Structures are given as structure tokens and as C-alpha cells.
Figure (cartoon, rainbow, N blue to C red):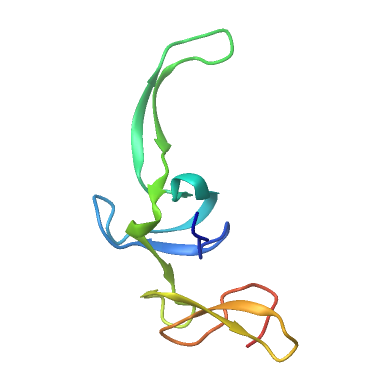
Length: 110
């Protein structure tokens, strides 16, 4: 299984499909299916029956989207970019945006 370059909390943009152009934050990563759950993206209508716990009815829920349909948002200009890895002087391996060279991992300066 290949390693995913996306992490929970990353800002992404949809690059293809029904929701093309929408931006959101990754809520959950599912590496075995190569999918991610993105806030406000790939919403579907779900019908649920009333039960003792829920009222039931029609609701909009987010479903996972394949990672090939999204790209990381460049922190400098807000456009889609690819992700690379680089080692800092202290030996720490971090992710960076290939378009601008900005470090994507929080808490590190490149």
C-alpha cells in the first residue's frame, strides 16, 4: 500500500468531478481505500427512517472522495499544488508545496 501525502487538517481543492473548484479541510483519511473525507465536499442526500434515537428524514452528508480528485492548496497563492518531501537542517522530514516551496507541516519553518 502506497503512502498518502495528505493528512487530516490539510486544506484541499477538488480538481475534477461534480464538485470541481470547491475547497475544504480533510476531516478523515482512509488509506486502505485511498479516499479522504473533505468538509463540505461530495455531499449526498441520505434518507433515514425514524427510530427511537433519531427523528428521521432527509439529510445531506459528506461521503469520502478519491485522493486522485483532490489537490493540496498552496499556502502562498491558494491554488492547487503537488506535494514533495524535504529534510530540514535538523534532520526532520517535512512536506512542502512544489509550486511555491512553502512547508506544509504545521509547527515547522522551512
